[in-house]
Length: 284
Image (cartoon, rainbow, N blue to C red; front, side, top):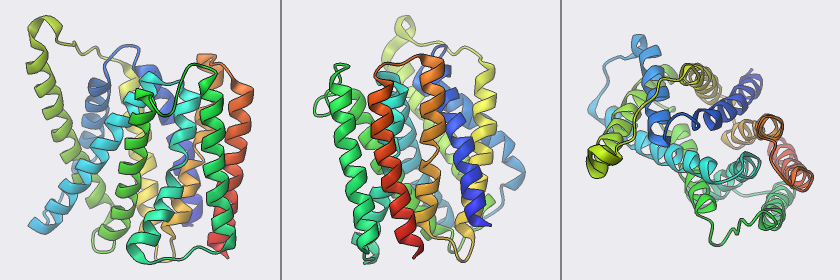
């Protein structure tokens, strides 16, 4: 069951990324994140329950990781073509595996190593393809933002596995979204005070914010419940969720008419092959 929940979560996540990219046409990065997350927190209000101080401190730390990942990730999407940003984002499972080795002493088998090497090769090929669009991986602001997003997201995934060992999924999801909303509101306030009245960015209501909130609420709920399953494997779930890049890539190519699609499609195919081999090796 946890495998199917992960697949459904991935599909929703792919559409979520596309709608987020579109919403940047009307609002700034922080306004999009704050508006959508506030709506998500509102949806999850019925599940807010009392917890220990230790629980809330743990969830505040998770909120910091998620906020850092979301802000940097959406900035990356703003500066980069969606097909490039989504392919970089799909590399996150490799770092989850790497951190699992470092933190938990896990060992990779031959299949898993083959998958990791293929993903690394795909990222190199993507850097070559992106260079043709004037994007240089060693100096691009968008690539740097996506790198921060990937590492913060990987850390959050590892932390999720830890805290769900003693917390309920809806408790984690509801309170985490509440704290993320608070952090984003503080970020918006600080930026507004820094910019002053003349340069202050205005918030424009966009129906897509509601759609973003619905998509991420459903996707995260499926993710947390799948991760809570006794037989669930974090590395496999993380890889399955990243397969959302297929939906993001296809819709991004159609809606935004981005360039170098054939080159990037080859890069994506290599990356997905790496993820599939990594999945196969993890299931053995």
